[in-house]
Length: 98
Image (cartoon, rainbow, N blue to C red; front, side, top):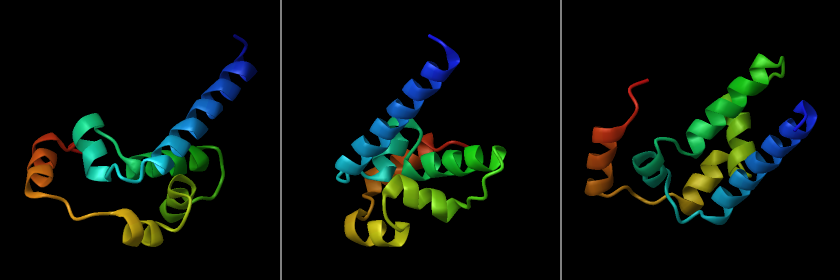
């Protein structure tokens, strides 16, 4: 696979991941963190960092809007539930130490 095609495939897979996360609003970020070690917020940070590395001015909130497909505060008010004691306990055990 040539480099251009590889980049196009990677971009398509990324877009599909964002779409999948958008379709699964029932999956909370804490669930993603506990199971996979990353969440929508992590993806937003990575997106902003990648943009900045390429000279594109983008802050965390702008990147969140790309990932959440709306302002984070709006998404949070509509879809984010309260974490259970079990979720918080699992998070404390498994959270990345960065």
